[in-house]
Length: 381
Ligand code: NAD
Ligand code: MG
Image (tube, rainbow, N blue to C red; front, side):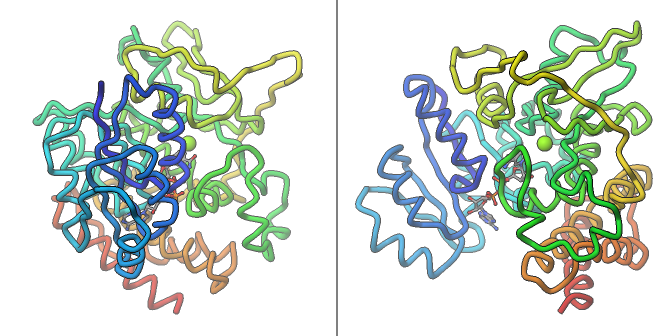
C-alpha cells in the first residue's frame, strides 16, 4: 500500500489521480490533499478518500471548509502550511500537480525526503531543473513524469541507454489555433483559446497549449528529465494526440508510446512504475482512427515556442523569467486585459529587461520570479 500526498487535488491532474486511486483501493492510500480554494470539491474528496490532512490556501475558503466538512481531518493553512505537509515524512509518493511556480517549494521538500515525485508540475523543472536534478541525486529521490509526452519518452527509455539516443521527438497537438493564420490570431477570444481539441485541462495549461508555450516548457522539461541537449530535442505537430512522443536511437530505430489521450494512463504509470497495473481507462481502435498526421511546428506563428528554445540555450535564470512572465501574461489574457498575441510580446520584453544569472541558487530563483512578476504587472495593469 503506497501512501500518497496529492498537491492540487481539485485540479484536472488531481481529480484524475483520484480517479486512478479509486480503481486501486488496495494499492494506494491518500494521506493528504491540498487545494487553493475549491473546498466544495475538497469536502467531497475528504468524505470519499478520508485523508489525514488537508491544506487550503485561500482564507475565506478555509473558513467555509470548516463549516461544510463533516470528517475528522487535520487542517493546514497559512504561508507554511503547504510545505509543512510536504515535509512530513509519512508518505511514499508525492503527486506534484499544483499549477505554476507555486509547485516548486513543496516539490523540493518531497525531494529532500527522498520521495518518489510523480511530477505533473512542469514549471518546477523549467525554473530550477539544474538544482532539482542535484537535489534528486543527493537525496536519492526519483522523478517519474506525469506529463504525457515525458511519460511516453520515459516508457520508451525502459531498457535503453541514454548514449544510444539520437533524439527525442515531442509530439504537439498544435492546440485550437493550429489552422489559423497569424492575422486571424489577432482577435481570438478567451473562450476560443480555452477550447482545446483533444485534452480537458486547467485554464493555464490550456492557454499555454494555444500559444504552444506548453510545448516550449516541455522541451525544457525534457532536457532536464532526460539529460539531453537542445539539439537532440525535436517537436513535431501531431494533431490527433495518439502518439504521445517518440525516441529515435542511433541505429535509426524509433520507439513511440501510443494510446487515446487520457491523463489517467501516465498518472497510473507514474504511481505503479516499474510495474504496470491492469486497467481499462482507454481503448485504442486503429481502424476507427484511420490516419495519423504530422507537421513541422510554425515558429513564426507560435513565438512562445521559439522563446522557450531561446531560453533553454541562454540557461541561468532566463527560463525562470520566461515562466513567470508567461504566468502573469496568461492570467492577464484570461481576465481580458491583454490580447492573445500580446503574450509573447510581454514575455520577450521581460527577457530583454531582466538580468540573467547563471547557475542560480534557490534564493536567486525565487527573487527572479518575484522581480519578473512585478515587472509584468507594471506592464499589464
Ligand atoms: P488546474 O488549474 O486544473 O489545477 C491546479 C490545482 O492546484 C488545483 O487543485 C488548485 O486548487 C491548486 N492550486 C493552484 N494554485 C495553488 C496555490 N498557489 N497553492 C496551493 N494550491 C494551488 O491545473 P492542471 O491542469 O491540473 O495542471 C497542474 C499541473 O500539471 C500544471 O503544472 C500543468 O502544466 C501540469 N499538466 C497538466 C496536464 C493536464 O492534463 N491537466 C497535463 C500535463 C501536465
Ligand atoms: Mg504534455
